[in-house]
Amino acid sequence: MIPDHEDQEHEDYVEYLIQSGRELNDLSLEQLGYRPRPEDLGTDDRHALEAEDRQWMESVTPEQRDKSLFQAKLLAGAHCGRPRPS
Image 1 (tube, rainbow, N blue to C red):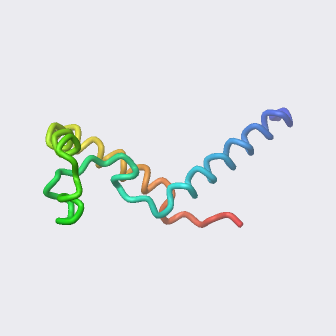
Image 2: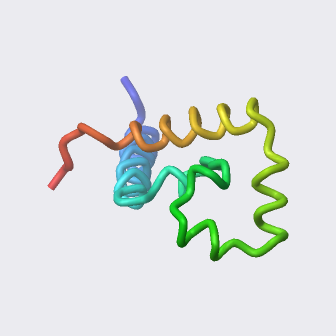
């Protein structure tokens, strides 16, 4: 049998994870860590970039970009399709 204090710690942690998932709602892949290519941005967004930001975006390797997309999708999928507790 699990001691009551450990059971409460588990419940608190689960509640923390649920709340963290709720905070991910409505975030873009970029906000979740995806590093897009400048040409993937809309015209207005691309023109709004400062030279330093554009240089940084262009310096990201395809491997880093793929990894960032994978991680962002994992985060996005961590809360999608699950019923929200009331």
